[in-house]
Length: 439
Ligand SMILES: Cc1ncc(COP(=O)(O)O)c(C=O)c1O
Image 1: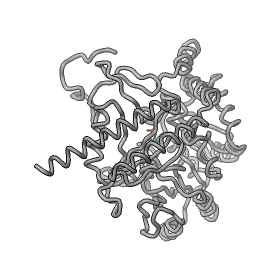
Image 2: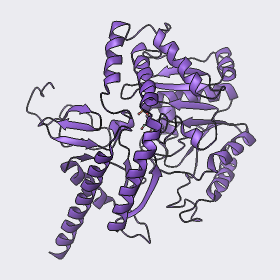
Image 3: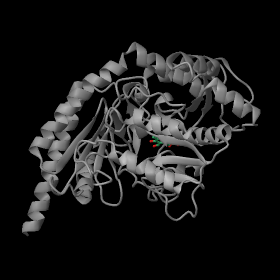
Image 4: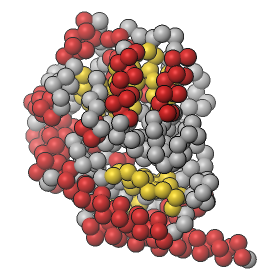
């Protein structure tokens, strides 16, 4: 690792972009482990920023990068290369017949931006419905349908951005159910959409399992109902599978788990395994219509060969190492560990999710379910000191939910080690809080 050039604070010349920077510089990453500049080992329960699903620096990713260097890394946007063509064919083989044409970009935000533009161009309409708690990216169109954070201070969002309440069974958005969503929020939500719409509903965009919004797993019937509602209104259904595609939930795509196929699919994070790559996937029909209407979405890195080469390696590893099955098996270990923690520690109000995407909600009181954000932050910081990197996601100002998502290659021993660290961190932070209150 190149050392910093001066002794100034690390962030003296960097813009702060949201979350606090970690307390130490990270020098190396392999599999489920990171090492800081002093060689201290850190267990990674966030898969980097949810991208390193096959583990950090998987040897096949490293080999693919070397191979790409023998070919081409980047080309004129109008040029195609063998890895890009192969990746488009590979995705078409994995997906239902109507999801047959891909556009390869760099980030999830860009893929959603393209999906929204394609939906608007095809339909000739402009209203896009999203979900409260959703995160779709930082570009203007994608950000307009982010309802979890970051809306304030930038002036008007994209005209026609509307929101449905997320089916959060632990905190029912319409104060109707408790722990078991019966879909009433969806009915009320669509009544409100109809009341607000100017008659130009183009598409609905959703994460099949809302992740940054707190790992919200809808009931099994939910997406089928959403699709029916979309069809009734002539809207396209866009699934954003940035985090859920390629194994995390034990299947190639989360829409398979929910038995509901989208009209447009976006892929990102997990496709590149840590390299910036995203894809917007549509039907032949939508492609033909949008092309005829002059669709343009050329970026500097559209159809770049390097990330496509790496994505092919990621998909091979997923299959050869049977990572879908592994995610389910290790997910059961993780759930068992988290439920054990929940029995032991009153602060854990809810454990949810499956496969290797699980949420743990920290509360002041299990009856009121009021979030304990301050203690959650303190425990998260203590976990890091003890060698476990955890992401605390927040819904609103005060919520405290760990999104626990180690690489799919995580071992049973590593899950056990992570659970033991969380146990120690909770015990210590709560004991310290009690001592402070007594003094
Ligand atoms: C579901 C989902 N969609 C899209 C994005 C945006 O992806 P990117 O940060 O690569 O633009 C994210 C990022 O966290 C995400 O979680």
